[in-house]
Every structure is written in structure tokens, then in C-alpha cells.
Image: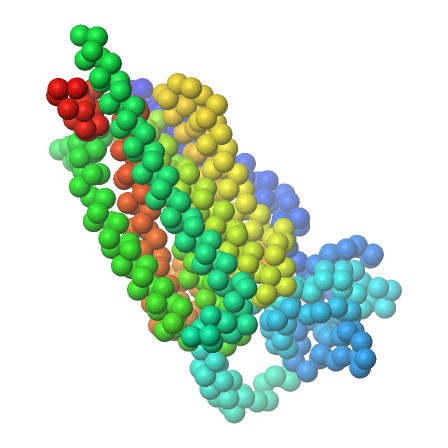
Length: 151
Length: 54
Length: 249
């Protein structure tokens, strides 16, 4: 083996070794790397009672209700399989919408309501002009109105 | 024009991003040219010293 | 033989002349592409249906993030070529990347924070994408720090090359972090298989900016690599000509 080939194998070996070590480490810490839990994971009991964690999912359509005279807002986070009710008592970010993604930080209380002290809006990778979004929305609600309650 | 500068209410986030980008782009040009010029100046000095010695 | 171009490319005087000649061929297109991209992105593109005009940050944030990853791949690949083939030109290219990469990684993080505040509701979260990008900044700074701590250029090249190669593992982690794990950051809109999730009026300026930033990086790299070559070729004859030393000097 020429010295050059030996060096080539050394470099490839380093990349492979670090890559495998990194993959194993990330696999072992999967739980910690997960930025948030979705409602199905909570229903499966992956969160210990009283543990502080992030809850992520969609804000269910029509579930947002505000308490008059205060900042308190209640809504339901869903992953279209399970739901978690959320209570929050502060200012919401600009992109907080019904039907849009949300990540809330807090803990479950005794009744199973998630008491959030921080609510972040999560948006998807789709960008479009407002007119397109409006006509898309109009087309969808005309064509597929009943499917929303089919669950 | 004012409407353009207002960026739909997001001016205080959008324009700092563009100013920062302009700064990074400009500084990188300056740093790159300075690095080349200093290397050339050092090489010239070296060559002059060698020629003076010989 | 197929390796001829490789060895010609690896010859410092040849590379130096080529780099000098090629620089304007990247610098001017870069300026034109970025100008067109800025007009398209800031003026012609429609506002987003959810983020309004705030989404226009994408036209500087995405190119900065793209450069932060691409520059690292160039830096690590040329470092590996330098280690394996003992090629001075490759080491010069690798060393030229670090400052550029570090500054654009910092820019990607800063513009991301300014975008996250109004849209997500936070400047910073320890989200997998943001954390791995921050790690990339530390890799660049580590590379620069390691080089600065070693006086001998040859030893600095070899030591920093190993660090650059080890860190390349972080690049796919950054890119796929938003797909592998639940993340606050959204999935890619353009850098993926399948159609970009963006209409042409928004997409074209973004592609122009990405191309413009890439050409700009190549021009910077060619300028910096010339300086790095002169620092490494202390005794070669051609440096006299390249440095502009006159015969009467």
C-alpha cells in the first residue's frame, strides 16, 4: 500500500468512525433531541406527571376561546389522533392561528390540561401570496366541507 | 415608498437583516483583499531581502 | 491520462494565474445576480399569506445558511485532498474558507433570530436545527483557533484538516435535523427532492440570490487562496512574479 492510499483510508476511516459514533449518540439521546412531544406520545404515557416539557401539534379549528377581560386563552392541540387542552395566560405570537402549528412549553395539571407558560408558533415550508391562499381555501371548503368532522 | 420601508409592520426585523448581510458581504471583500495584499507585501519584502543578500 | 488536470490544478503557479484570471468571471455575475435577486425579492415578489412582508428575510437568511454549509463542505473536502495528496493548493483553499464560512454562519444565525422573534415568538430555542447550526459556528471558530495556535503553516494545515474532516459529520445533521426530529424550524422549501413549496414569483428571486451568493463565495475564495499560496510558497521562483516584485528590486 502506498503512503497516499494509507492516508486516504485514514481519512475515510475517521469520517466513518465519527459518523457512526454520532449516529449512535443521537439514537441514544433521541428523547432529548426531540424538541417537542405530540399528543399521541402524551396519550401513550411518555411524559412523567409533573414533568416540564414542550407540547407540539396543530391548534384545532374552532377550539380557541378567550376569557373576556384577561389575556387567558384556551385551545386544543391535536395531531389528528389525540387531543390535549391547553391554557395560556400571555401574549400569543403573530402566526398563532387555528389550524396552524404550535409549540407550547409547560406542564400537565392534575386534570390533564396543559398549562403553558410559553407558546411559540410553528409554520410550515409553504409560502404563497394571500390571493392564492384565499382561492385555495375557498376551493377546499366548497369541495371537502364534511371531511373535517369525519374522524 | 413609505409603505415599502414599513415592510408591512416588520421593518424592525427585515431591515436589520439586510443591513447585517450587507455588512458581512462588504467586510468579507475587505478582509479577502487585505489578506492577499499583506501576503504579496510579505513576499515582496522576502524577495528583496534575498536579492540584497546575493 | 485523467489525472493530468488534477496535477495541473495542483500546481501553485498555474492555480495562481488561473485564480487571478477567473476572479472577475465570478465577481461580476455575483453582483448582477444579487442585484436582480434583491429587486425580485424586496419589490416584485408578493407578500406571504401568513407572514406578510416579514417572509422577505428569507432572501438573505437562506443564502447565508446555504453558504454556511457549502463553505464547510468545500473546506473539509479540500482539507482531505490536502492530507491525502499533500497538495499545497488544496490546503490553501481549505484555509481560505474558514473566515468566510464563520461569518456567514453567524449571519445565518443572526437573521434567523430576527425572523424567529416575530413569527415563532422567540429569538432562540434549543431546537435541533438551531443548536446544530450553532455547533457549526463553533467548528469554524475551532478551526481558526487551532490554526492561529500553531506557527508552522504545514503543521497548522495538517492539524486543522483533521478537525475539518471530523466536523463534516455535522453537515447532514444540520440539513436533516428538521426532518429527523420534531423541530420548531420548518422543513426545507427548496433544497429537497420534489417541487419547491413556493410559487415562481417568490422562488426565482431566491434562486438568483442563492446563485449570486455562491458566485460571490467563489470569487472571495480565489482571492484568499492566492494570498494563502504566497504564504506557503516561500522560496519558489514564481512568487517573485506573482507578488509583483520588479527585476530591479
